[in-house]
Amino acid sequence: MTHLRLMAIGQNHIFVFPKQIAMRKKPNQQNYADYTPEDFEVWKILYDRQMEHLEGKVANAFLVALDKIGFSNTTIPSFSDVNQRLNRLTGWQLVTVPNISPPKAFFQRLSEKKFTATCWLRKKSELDYLEEPDMFHDVFAHAPLLTNVHYTNFFHQIGVLAMKYINNDEVITKLQRLYWFTIEFGLMRSKGGELGIYGAGIISSKGETEHALSDRSIKHDFDIRRIYQHNFRTDIIQEEYYVIDSFHQLANSIPEFESALFEPAYPD
Ligand SMILES: [Fe+2]
Image 1 (cartoon, rainbow, N blue to C red):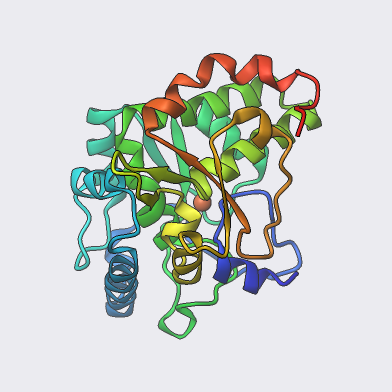
Image 2: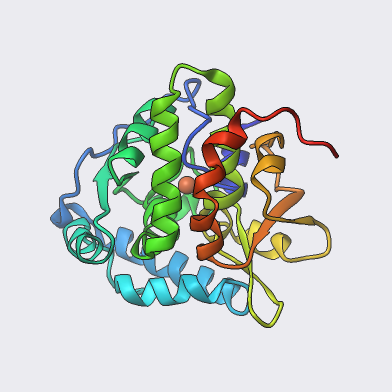
């Protein structure tokens, strides 16, 4: 596995911490005046390119959320503005971190309805290859759906349970899988039956956007018990995805989250 390849494929939020890479110093808070013309250009290139790739492939709920959060291709989002909107809609907040958060810190923030996000952007010379998730992944792909109360109720519960069982490696592994196959790599079926992307790891990845809805991957109906047993790889484009019908379905699964963690292995 090379981390560079991993990040080019499916930029995930946690679970792989690139200790082997001497990471350059990143800001630990957003100072809007520090953004350069290149940063604005990179944001616009990535935004325009990904919106074009997502056309007809992204879940409508994401587009609704993108409108609610008010992003555009010409303006790098201000965390202060984003947080005002999120606070009004769901009570969530973005919290700036310089690099990928280790799992415990990440889950701790989730349990507080806070989402850790970087505020720096990749260079123009590394549009498709970067060491770790930057703001385009963390903010463009993750932040819009934090305006959706059903989505955030589900997301919050992952953090709450993770903190309750933070010293239980088996439970944490299961919750990482649940996070992976929903928040990062989830698909949604529309009322008309078409599949759409809502997972942030796909939304910010050009290659995975093409692949996820193709017939080269296997799609399963959303099933918490199956996901809890489904190991995933971070170093390849995903081969299997889980499909929900709506964010209501995710929120409605909350009552079985905890009990299903301790059930015997699910039969094939
Ligand atoms: Fe992520």
